[in-house]
Amino acid sequence: MRFVFGLLLSTLFLMTSFPAFAQKPETPNPEVMNKLAFLVGNWQGEGSIMMGPGQKRTFTGTETVSMKLDGTILVIEGFHKSPATADGPERVIHNALAVVSFDRASGKYKFQSYLSDGRATGAEASVPEKDTFVWSMTDARGGTSRFTIKLDEKGDWVEIGEYSMDGKAWRGFFEMRMKKVK
Image: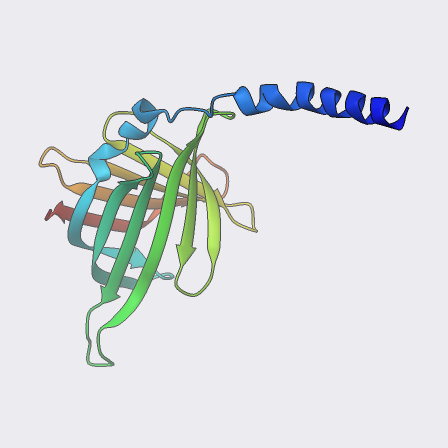
């Protein structure tokens, strides 16, 4: 009896397990990620950020962007420095890595960023039109920071950062212009 019960249990296990093994893994959706291909390359340029009222800081830097894992993720590495001043030497002000992917279940892009100081954040992302990428995140006060990258008529990377407490009135705090070098 024990043998028959064991055989029955084994058969039941095998019958329910094989369909799972037979399923094909989801295939990547390159068309969706290819909308971000305009960012791929090595970029150099400069920009500015408002650190508070009347505290505009300039910087120079690079953005290195590549597709990975058969085109299923986009990796963005940003490295920016403030210029040397009478008060001190050049210093790193932004050292970050971001990973962009597409979640088929939600039908949305995922944007996950990591900073050299250990902070990380997830953001909403979209490609609202050709050669445009937007991501935004909400802070603890309920305000939203939104970053928009567009290629201009010369093919330069132009990025703006804006902040809003209500999602209607936006105030710019960040600008960057990068030229593709490779």
